[in-house]
Length: 269
Ligand SMILES: Nc1ncnc2c1ncn2[C@@H]1O[C@H](COP(=O)(O)OP(=O)(O)OP(=O)(O)O)[C@@H](O)[C@H]1O
Ligand SMILES: [Mg+2]
Image (tube, rainbow, N blue to C red; front, top):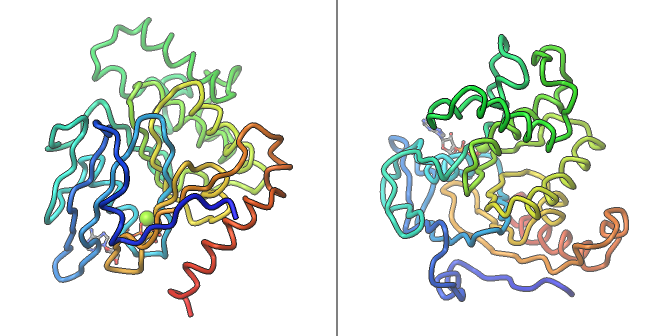
């Protein structure tokens, strides 16, 4: 069994911590009227790590991501970025929406450059930076295309290029790969792991796919059904530098998938 750690919400607070996690989620609860979406969430995020949030529909994944992004106020608790409590969105955090919210009237390049104007960059520099990230997500040659001329998967890449271009330290991604076929999704997963290597960014990633979470994550945070609470934290200990097809047949990988399945089965039975 290569599963590194399973910790319940009782032991989560005692996880070994480096002195300055880039993001700290401290005692977050969220009520929408009478509906309790999240209850007492405590988490730390280390620079350069990729964490997945997994949990049943309605358990508060999007809510938690939006609170970390500063787009939504918690009812209780606070989020700190580099030790400072946040009071709204900030440049160091980029939120990647599920549908990527592209501007249909703007080219791929202009969509990717969206967000840079607010940072006060001149036009030439904005275009240069956008061009770099459009290439990095594999869309060279499509800079002047419009969203309607792209496939769903390509549109998602434009959204990713936009999030990378603003050069945030933390990328908050809400089910970014949900709308594409399995083959494209696998390519994305590999691209994501490559980006994490070259960009050294911190990723927080919502997914419904256990296999995807195990494949891409340093750590998987499992939430319980509403009100969402920390249920388990799993750190898949699987070889990263092997051929992807081999990795998917790795016994450690398969065991971790199965272990998460059995952990969440109790919620669906
Ligand atoms: N703006 C809102 N007003 C009232 N209730 C809300 C609002 N947004 C979310 N909720 C409720 O809070 C709970 C958590 O919602 P959230 O969207 O965070 O779940 P989720 O885990 O992202 O679900 P899914 O997997 O389906 O995307 C749900 O019960 C939802 O009905
Ligand atoms: Mg959601």
